[in-house]
Image 1 (tube, rainbow, N blue to C red):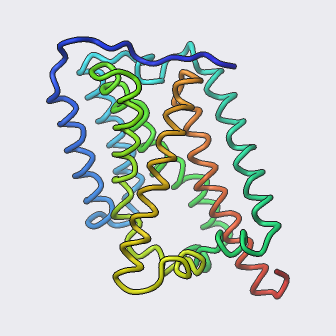
Image 2 (cartoon, rainbow, N blue to C red):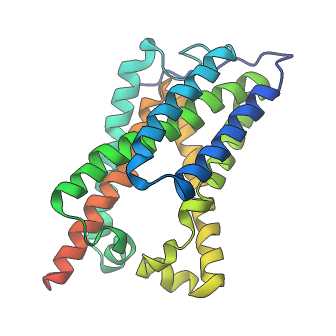
Length: 249
């Protein structure tokens, strides 16, 4: 179901509201990755989502401009469910190969209990990560950029900012993934390469997510893809680690 929708470009809009949102995102990134206790991230994300939506409305964006209109709800859900199925199938195919299992093994989930894994994948990921990031980058920021610079530049700029958003979270990531560590190496050089690869990968993901938001008319579509990539990644990594500990893979 293609219901292509994006905000129309408007001449003469001031740039400062976009700058305010970007500065707010930088501050939020630093706080949640370096200052706030992990247990508070969900509250920060929910509060931040409402704050960003308020800024979007004050800037003159409609709910439809931000991919939150009722008209595109069914389309967004259908695209979102399709993305979940597609990403899960991709994980299943990758898990059938040893190199794929190696790539998915993340030691950060190794010691999670079953209930804690479920909380992380079904609560923390969708509400503390996906909801906030999609509201920020594919709803508010995308709409503000499209109304000022057109849809193409909105896709490019929002995707690049989404990639840069992952600099802090990706620091040290090569130490938790043996597959990534074997590619980028160790020490400072490995850390820098891991960050660069993360920024490139998430920039590409940002383009894909923005495309899903455009063809469905709703941010629910990229939310589905975003959750599946992260949430199902936790499930597969956790399962692979336990199978290997039992000598089964």
